[in-house]
Image (cartoon, rainbow, N blue to C red; front, side, top):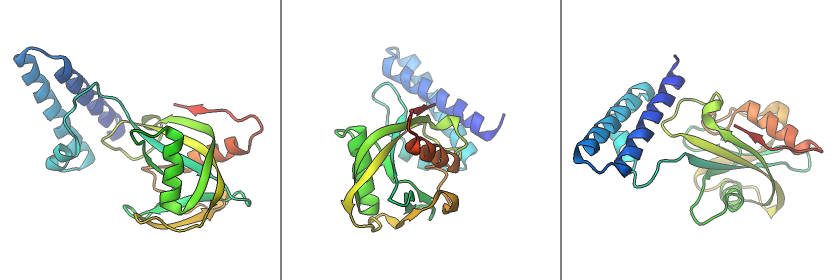
Length: 207
């Protein structure tokens, strides 16, 4: 079993412990679920080489049934069929624009907002290209369980410029992509999105 598979099992243990904490009535059960959660965080820290204190600070106490986080991204092409990308300040690598879904905004509204904030480009959402379970793709191991929504968006205006939390923004041809932030997007996913965006019979990729 590789590290990614082990980490997925630990995430499942953490989710079970948090579900138990929500519904457990007996103090004895609550204590055992707290212990199970602590063990899961300890294992997660060892597998991901992350300090235990950092994980404890990162994960807020769970008050409802645990569900996956939602990462919303936009796939944007210019008139040359070049792909709009932003360079992350966290790792210095490139990704298609996007981020965590916002409460109070629809998924497409989040995609539109992220493109504007990260690249200066104004877009409208055209269609949904993919709903990915991050676990099913070779992203680097990460503590969160994530669903990724990718929208095809069309440019309507704006001016290309890096957002305040981005290092750069630009358009890239499919055959000359920059170094990718694989935590956020994979080359195979970009190729799939491009093929779908250019297809006369577009379909939604899932899982």
